[in-house]
Length: 446
Ligand SMILES: Nc1ncnc2c1ncn2[C@@H]1O[C@H](COP(=O)(O)OP(=O)(O)OP(=O)(O)O)[C@@H](O)[C@H]1O
Image (cartoon, rainbow, N blue to C red):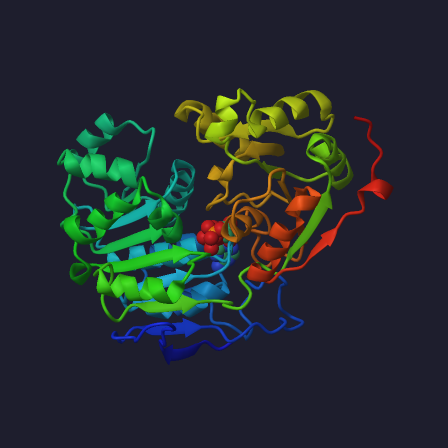
């Protein structure tokens, strides 16, 4: 699929800036030789090595090939020419489409491994995503340079001495930990050549993170002295965001918006279903679905408990589901829990355990961003997500094997009254979901 390049036109206000938009043309069904995931390029493609030739060090490309990154995905094919030319870029493409490798290859093309200074900074919203990105960066770096993770719940005192003695070339950080280190003068960001903000809409939407991230963008570093990359599968009001990037000097004025599959935000290999039941039936319906679907591994998404529900002394959905599953589920998958309120050690244990075996992970939306575990075949929304964007990111935790044809499913449990909300998500994200006729499929006694 050839990328269309055009000068951006902004709806709703006059575009005073010469930024560029690259977007793949409106969605067309993929050719017969193409994977349903939409990840495979649509024409006989150059290899990743060819796309990156002369820009990314050979040892990094060799490592990428060794771990199986040979053919670029669509977002990599479209964005790498822009990224490797050093231009600022907003990477906007479906969940699981390969944005991480695209921006990490730019990081390796920008840094000089012979210099002893912090040259690249990747900012992520959660500790779990930080662990993943660090792992991929370390695989690509091999031993040519150091990659440090500065994440919430980490050992910042020890890292402070390390960063002073031997500055890592690349730092992957959560916003709070990074600011703490910079404010304690553990290191300065003056030598940063490239700054990546992953899940940028989430970070800008978080009242806890937005002020600090603005400082990182405009006080601790300056757009004119670095390459800036923002990535996400969802950038609501993206034209407005491009405008803000330029106006607030978060990027240079020629920032490029690479938007892949703009009219189909939901990956096409996901099969969406829903079951209408009463609240008190949901645990039993969920159990029946798990027995029927026999997932390889699954995430069961629950809502974070509201203050009102806490005050009323109700147990949170997470505990209700975990306790019910631990007693009633007889399958082979281990039932695990991940939520914001857990301490970092417990979070780390859950996160390590899910990587090692088949699991049923009961989680709040903390697992909905960036979590990349290819073995997840099923997603269940025990509680309806709050927004269409939340639905998109929860659903995107499955179907993450590039070039795979296997179908993955997303099942949402709703009450009759919630049906219209799901319909709104469908309209906004342009996907179809199929109703599961519960009466004929399950028999359960409450
Ligand atoms: N060129 C490639 N060839 C094979 N596998 C790839 C390639 N690029 C990425 N992948 C794999 O695809 C999966 C999804 O990639 P990644 O995590 O970068 O997606 P993403 O676009 O960042 O998704 P999200 O928005 O959900 O975070 C990962 O398991 C990654 O290893």
